[in-house]
Length: 160
Image (cartoon, rainbow, N blue to C red; front, side, top):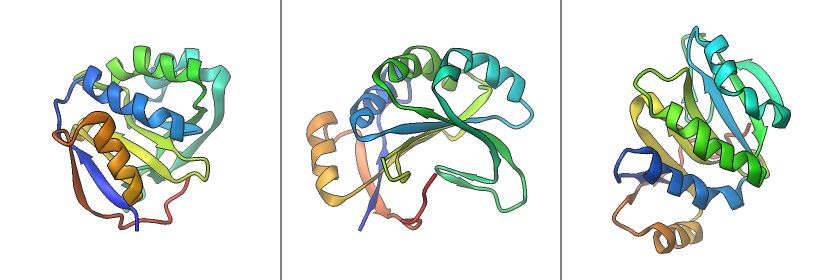
């Protein structure tokens, strides 16, 4: 059964970028979600990524979030190619850490569309959805001090 592994280390772009870099080889696509009423700002920030856009859609659920009140957001899904991942880390991650980011969330997706890493910037939360053997590999790569198993994945069929 998949487990939720939370990041409990320092909340800063460099530390979280280390997790993103670790997750990148396992992911084929990633999602970014425009903040409520901030689509124009988000699109300006994401301009350089647009050649790698797979789909842009209005949704009420995205990696790490299910809106039960009917609210929607613009979710953009991009190819997770090496050059794009560099742009994500160098250009987009600092925006996600700003005080009022026009982009709320990052979801890094496995080949089958299941989330691997989820970042909810306004909650200062990052977690991974991992198989038991993947937990051991993560702990070896980033150390056990910054990650904690939080429990079973309660939404194991989540795909995007």
